[in-house]
Each structure stands twice: as C-alpha cells, then as structure tokens.
Length: 369
Image 1 (cartoon, rainbow, N blue to C red):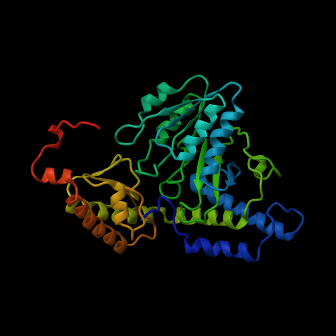
Image 2: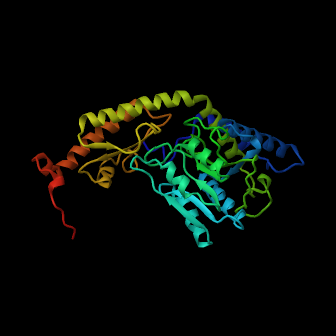
Image 3: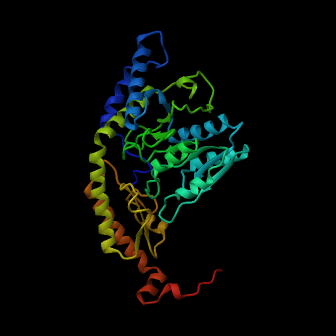
C-alpha cells in the first residue's frame, strides 16, 4: 500500500529486460560491431516507447538514473545555461525534496527563488504564479501529481502562462506519467522528469524530456564521453533503458483500465473507513486528484502511532497507495486493521475522551508551555 514510494516490476517488463541482462550485453555506444548495434537498437526503441507515452519526439528523450537526476538536470541545467541574463526561478513549497534542494543550492550560487505556497486544497493559485513571474525568470518547476496527497496541479494552465511569458516550464511527472494522460505539446511542457520504478519498471533508470522547438538549452551536470548527445555522459545501461521503455509501453496500453480499477479500489477504501470512523478528513482537492494516492487525517490520533500499529501493512504516514497489482483483499485487510487501531488509539486519547463527554474543544483556551 505504498506504491508512491515504489512499484513492483511488471513481469512483462522483466521479460523484455532479460535478454539484455544475459545475451545482448554489448555497449550501446560501440559502433564497430554487432554487439553494440544490437544494444543501440534496443536503446533507441526504448527511447521511442518513452516518447510515445508523452507525445514527444524520441530525440527529445534522454536517459538518466531516475527522476532525482532528471530534476537536478532540468533545474540546475537551465538556470546555469541562462544565468548571464536570467537569475530567477519559481517553484512551490510542496515539491519533492530533490527539487527544493536543487533550488536551495542555486540560491548559494546567486540565483533568486520564489517558493509559491499552495491553497488549503493543495493546488497553487494561478494568479500568484502570474504575479511571481519577473523579466529575468528562466524557469518554473511545478510537479504534476503530488507524491504525498495526490493532487493534480493545473499543468495545462501553468504551461500556457509560462509560454505566454516566454519562461521555460519544467514538471516533475514521476507520479503522473503512465497513470494519467500526459502530452508535452498540448500542455506546453518544456522539460519533464520521469522515473522507471514509479511505473512498474526497474529502479536506477529514468528519463528527462527536453523540448527541441523552441529549443531548451541545458548545462550538463557531469562530464565524460558525451553520450546522450552531450546531455548526460556515461554508458546508458541497456537492460534498464529497455525496462523503462517496456514499462512505458505497457502503461500506455493499460492506462485506462488501471485508472478505472484503481478508482474503484480507492473508493472502496475511503468509503469503508469513513463509514466506520468519524472525524476523518481526506487531504487534497477531491476533484483534481489522482485516485491511487489517498491521504487521510484521523482526528485525535497521532500519525506515527498509527503507522507503528499497522506494522504488517506497508504504508507512509497518512498515505495509502493503490496500484496496478493491489488486490481487493489487500484493501479490505488494510481497512480492517486501520479501523481497529484508530479506535484503539482514540480510546487512549484524552482529547477523544473529552469529545465523547460532549466538550467543545474549540471553546477551550489552550496555553502553550
């Protein structure tokens, strides 16, 4: 129940990878013999599969070690390339740590960063974004689906705003690609980060989409043999790239079915919990939301205590993740255990006891020591 952290490898993906782990072991950058040509052909097919999923040109896809590297490359790469005339970046306060840390690092290099707050429903205020844009803003970086509460930001609207102001738009789409439809041209996305192990592919591989027209320029993070057209030096690991490509192809084929099935299971989990337990709040905008990421707050229960009580269920604090291979039985078991332990923990809570006695907690004047 923690598929936002990672997903299991789809058996169909493993089947595609195995030959390149055993028999076709050539370096994809070796141009003088068949071993290299075989691996290069597999790598380029994987590039096409990734591109197809997001409506991109294969030449706009570059393989990386994962979304963390892709986010670092997008943010630091764009900022440093255009630093002579643009020194301002915009992001949000709820981004993944690798985005926030990249921005903080750039601040030590003299860049200015605006960290936009989000509204109570987890979404950004588009007016605040427009007001934050400055003549020297080079990049806006806002994730598509939040990894903690599952809200979907208005990516198309953000892309339109950035495009009209001639500012590059990057989105960390690790939690969105392969789960909801994404089209980089329709959404006016200039850079996108993708992770293999979030879409039932292998760990250790990801990709970055970089728009060709109008061209986005990046300063590479690492030096070396100039692989990936100089964008990311280092030998591309063919088996992992093949796995990422296969995962993207399977996700494209299964997306509609997966979404419907996950929505049914998510509704089952939320309905059963809220029917049995009062004072439960679902965090994040209920309409602009990916159903496979459910974040609940249980009043009068400490999150860490509940997490420890549910030690036989893989969970993150307050977050329930539902994916392609989650079963109805797993959902029902989680619901049963959650209800059992929330009730038990509330019985130990003095606040819950006061509520049961009819005390209005809002009327109490609390003092802090």
